[in-house]
Amino acid sequence: MSVVALVPAAGRGERLGAGVPKALVEVGGEPLLVHAVRGLWRSGCVQQVVVAAPRSEVDVVTAALASVGAAVHVVIGGAERSESVKLALDAALEIVPDAEVVLVHDAARAFTPPGLTASVVAAVRAGAPAVIPALPVADTIKQVDADGVVRATPDRATLRAVQTPQGFAVDVLRRAHEAALADGVAATDDAGLVERIGIPVHTVLGHADAMKVTTPFDLTVAGALLAARSPAVEGQA
Ligand code: C5P
Image (tube, rainbow, N blue to C red; front, side):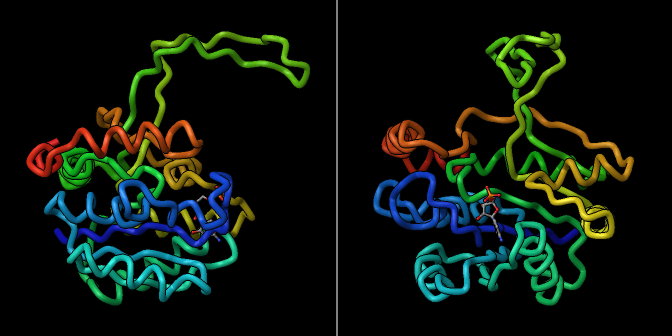
């Protein structure tokens, strides 16, 4: 069962304030995107990675990824994230026509352990149509109104913080995106699109290292995480 992995990184998002798209912000001398693709490849279960990059960054991204030694192809992304996912999926299936499993990964979750990717793939291979890594939440979560007044306190035991890579049977991701397009729904969460069409989304236990690098604080944490890893540990996690 062949597996392809998509990394939509074609947004211009510069919220980290480094003056470059977030995926190109460096940790330990390499862009987040490079770390993310390396992690996917080290899982040992991905045949092809396809990255969607901004048109102006395709050459830079392609050059940066050369050092990973992975089967990786870069496409120009679309106007919306969902379009970037679709363009990346089309390219991946041209390269690996018999792919049955597709992963969608966020470059900002650059230090996701390869073992987590392998467990997502294993769950899809075992028959789940859609699988996401999820962690119990440590904080109590409140629902508030526009004025910041608490309206509800969901039972924490039922809540999960979700991560990537998200894994899907290829036809399930396709159907979810087609339905979203037809209904004019945009989403940053592919599993949410699968949920919308009534297909169950399963979870596997996530990992703290699959944190999303979003703020300068996260960058500091990511740097420490990378410094603490030896190559041997990184391969096993
Ligand atoms: O900007 P936003 O937070 O929605 O982006 C979420 C992810 O989708 C980012 O990784 C971004 O690079 C990607 N994206 C994309 N193509 C777009 C817009 C966003 O691949 N047109």
